[in-house]
Length: 348
Image 1 (tube, rainbow, N blue to C red):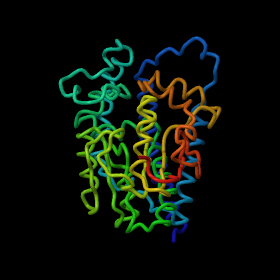
Image 2 (image 1 turned 45 degrees about the horizontal axis):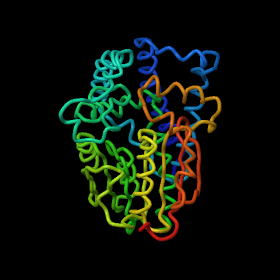
Image 3 (image 1 turned 135 degrees about the horizontal axis):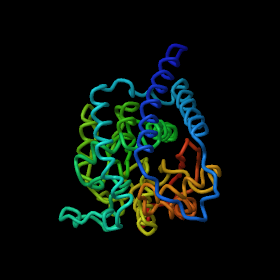
Image 4 (image 1 turned 90 degrees about the vertical axis):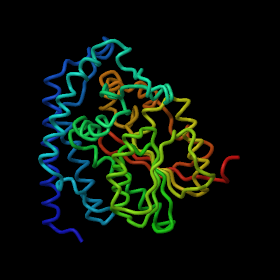
């Protein structure tokens, strides 16, 4: 059971973490030249730094309350290698010049055109976040998690952990040792690593289109058994009907065009058993936190998210019909966590 010292240690580590990443966020902003907002947006207010930090700490407080209640284990954020962290920071800033060139360059500079890109769907051949190589290189895979933590000022891992709350409820119904979890678009395996830390006997499967990102995930999950990682598209999954009890999608839907989003929902409905649980952790949408709506409009322009504007206006409950019914939802800083239950027989 957590005590006062545990809380002090957690909060101290999180303050150091936020200082590290939010500080890099501020430095990166000083080194970057912002894209001009369209004229119709210029009178709109954006949350200031004080508001962002206050809301970020509200997330950290919710994170601690989940830990203290035994919903999930405390993170291991502070157990990393300081030299490795310095190297990642140096790599992030070394790549920033190339990111800036793409941000202010030609539209063609945001596309992947090499021979390796031809093997991927057209919507995937993008340098998302303006990062070098898109999702198709080892360097990108090594850089990605640090880049996202800087973007969210050290809050990305805590936002992702909120998906463990509905996971616990879902596994309570099924039994962790009997359940099968599918993480759709698992990337570098951060959510699966937290799932296995909390449920070592849980059978997990991750799919992703990026072989380099799956290689990072494989290293992160190497300490556990009952782990399967597969290179596959979310809209054409190589699994039989009703193969899984729980499915998770963490920051996937906002990177899919509308037609693919619908195809992915249909595939999840197919591979998830009736009564199974779908957990979505993704960006806030318009109206979830009205004071952030201006940031949601500006984000796809500033960070090259070509399908994001469609996602933030998507009616998720309608998207999930008729296969799923909504169960729970909550907000977590820049993210939302939405849970659905699979109803009826698998689609034919």
